[in-house]
Image (cartoon, rainbow, N blue to C red; front, side, top):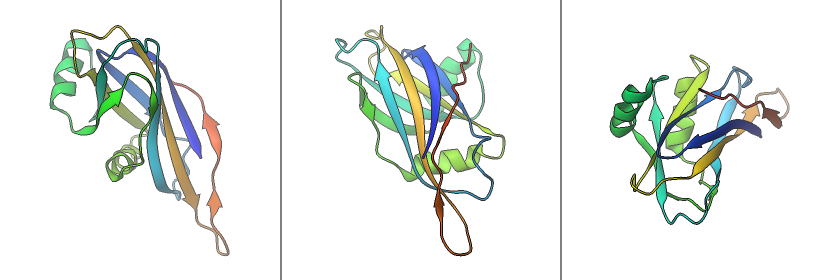
Amino acid sequence: MLFINYGLENVYRSEYWFTLSSIPSNATITSAKLQYTLTDWSVTNYFAVCKLSQYYAFQQLWDAIGSSPLLFSYLSYNGGETSSTQGLIDAVNAARGNGTLYLGTASQDENNSNSYAKVNLILMVTLPHPKFQLLLKTTLSMELLK
């Protein structure tokens, strides 16, 4: 299991990036999900996660989040973990070529977002072996985007 951590960012509209270089090139991703915690559970709100194609400056980020493919919606501010989806597995696989997965978040009520989110990308991968498959378990360091 690979844990790829990211620091705190305001959920209002934010960008997260995950360095994928520690995933061996011959690994097969069998599961991908997001684990998230938020700083203000008193907010009764939801947020969405989309796949971004690159790093964006602020105004471009705002526009990119609004027009990017949606991966998850109605994630609770109470924190939690998404199910593994083929959409997230595909997003990780597509990002392996350049080594970085970019995700954007947007509060689904942008007038009510004073919370910060910490997001972890959890991957289950298998490695080929002539007689058996290995399940890789490791923790990757956090990348903070300013």
